[in-house]
Length: 391
Image 1 (cartoon, rainbow, N blue to C red):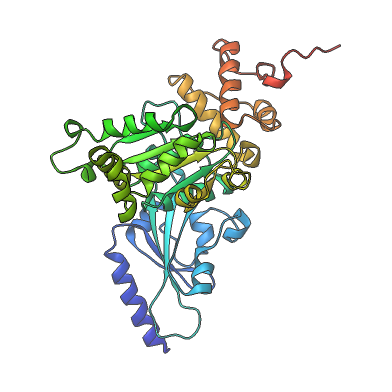
Image 2 (cartoon, rainbow, N blue to C red):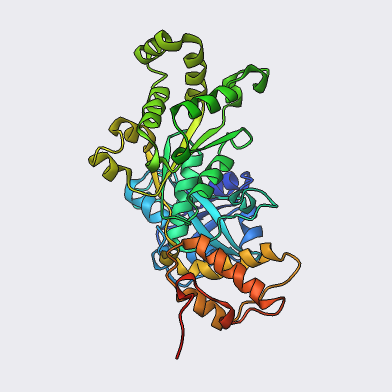
């Protein structure tokens, strides 16, 4: 391509991205930014063009791989297909979670074409259950970012999603966040604890959701939200059977069979589940339970189309500091909490078998023991250290 042709293409792409409201930047084969729109410049830097993309967006000296993140440009060049991921970016306002949509530029070149990146900021408030709620997803580590990327992908579809993780890791909170990020976020969320529910209880909850007086003027489908099934690995056999039957309500023969048993009620329940998005939460591996005949295979394949693993806190210790500060801010919102290096070192030295729930327990007790003063290392007492005596 001639220099004139290259200039003509660059002028064209600058005009196209200039009309985009979202931040957009374009990188060449050397990962240098060759064009950026005003929305990108306003957030990152007025001197972005000519610099390496990771320097501008991540504030680091090396490629994304050094931050344990997948490089979207490299992924596009490998497949020559659009790619979407989630990265932690550093802006003058601080760190932020940004979804990045990347695609190859359409220019007549045989070599690697420039890659166009469109940035969509994640609303940080959507990672909590509300502005006044005590629970919030907090983290910037690569394991957390990968998990959140999958959660954003799950939120864009109605695909059944299975969330796996240890006790106290935030599995249920992630399920609620997926609902809140989705197009159904303004619609009802029906949470069912499978360990405390049998088939009849579930039917009762779904009948309540399907009551005509509970529906809008449009239809049950117009108000369908998300069905969040927690502790699915502890579901009894009759509940698994009932769930499977409801999930198969869109099959003609199953629907006919259901109508023979109870034409009116089953049709109503089937419609509610068919229109609701299914998100499941479990601690134990359902495949292992399936192998020992404690979980129905067909139900497993119905609910596990997309699986998300919540990393334990010991696998993302760099998140302990921001988590601790967020927890203390919510405990005493009118105070500016500063945790010393010695306190943060002590917190980071623990493995947290109880995960985020254990960290919250430890910090709440430390805050109470401090009685208004600055928290000291002696105030940090871990549960398994209780009762120990020292000579």
